Amino acid sequence: MSEYISLSETAELVGKCKETLRRWDNEGILSAVREPVSNYRVYRKADVHALLGNLFENIDKEEISNYVEPENEYSVLELFAGAGGLAVGLEKSGIKCVALNEIDKWACNTLRNNRPHWNVLEGDIKDFNFSDYKNKVDVVTGGFPCQAFSYAGKKLGLKDARGTLFYEFARVVQDVSPAICIGENVRGLLSHENGKTLQGMISILDEIGYNVVPVQVLKAINYKVPQKRERLILVGIRKDIDVKYEYPKPYKKIYNLSDALKKGELFNSNVPKSEGVKYPESKKKVLDLVPPKGYWRDLPLDIQKEYMGGSFYLGGGKTGMARRIGWDEPSLTLTCSPAQKQTERCHPDETRPFTVREYARVQTFPDKWKFDGSIVQQYKQIGNAVPVNLGRELGYSIINFLNEFYKTKNQKEVNS
Image 1 (spheres, rainbow, N blue to C red):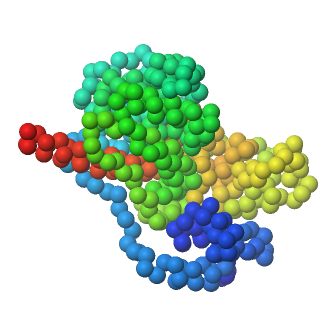
Image 2: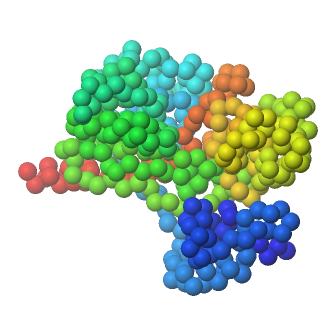
Image 3: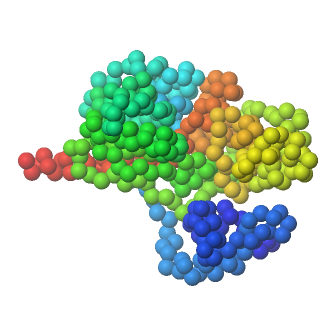
């Protein structure tokens, strides 16, 4: 049995992210070593257990739970709904979906086929008037794409954002007036246009009557998702509401690829068989040489140079190239195409990309949730989705907020 454990395993054991472990390594708190055979950065088990004994003697071993019962019936209007990852997650938490807007016809078919009772509004958001939902839904959510604004003045207003999909999101929030609105986006929004785009969004929500909670990037692996996906969450609270919103608390347990594809805590059966794309024979020959958790640097030097081409001489780790996932680690973030050279996600044992159902498992979709369209369309829908389990934990945080809001509101009505 090895005396070493990987960076991922160490991060899970001590309940810290990899960035913290790298900092601890630099500071001498917990030093990494090079594993003699693979030359990977690893940690001695004895060092990790000694640290756990010293630093975490008094830590509460009980896992927290974000679960909370809705005290009323809560409803959500979802924009840019995609294939329903967030909507299914919110449904699992106990929030009723009253309507969903989505422009992609295949994703709309997916929503309708799986939930015939959902009101799926297919088409461009610009063509819809949502004012019928005014004061009738508690939440508006939307994963609007990140687009640059044109800046008319120092403070961006709603009219300056016309032509962008965030403008449409804000327009609907203004027309519907929910207690809370949730926008989700890629982490890159933090630095887009040097942060101006995000600041513009915050000032627009302020203009239409919403206070924005400090923005957070949630790591899916902390919310029962076996995948290293990150989502930026933008929460707006209507200004007449004096109730604090709190993000879902991260769990200590990190799930890995084995949890996603095999019977266990996350799923009660092994992943169902399904279609999947294949590698060309030339690529398969290269990836056959890569071990689980390995990537292009594990190839012989001459093959590295041939496979990488000009990228071989550029800077950066390019760790997604010729990358094979290991069973005992979470998947890297899934993309819309499972066999892109820059973002390879090869199966641990077989030299092939993940199948459609394996993709869906990594995103924590239920096995019964079927995707419409060609295999290319199905991968795209799954790759674009919010992981279902992350959506569920967000749902609990919304319910927690709404329970408190309605309790406060009812007390005020009784006292007035």
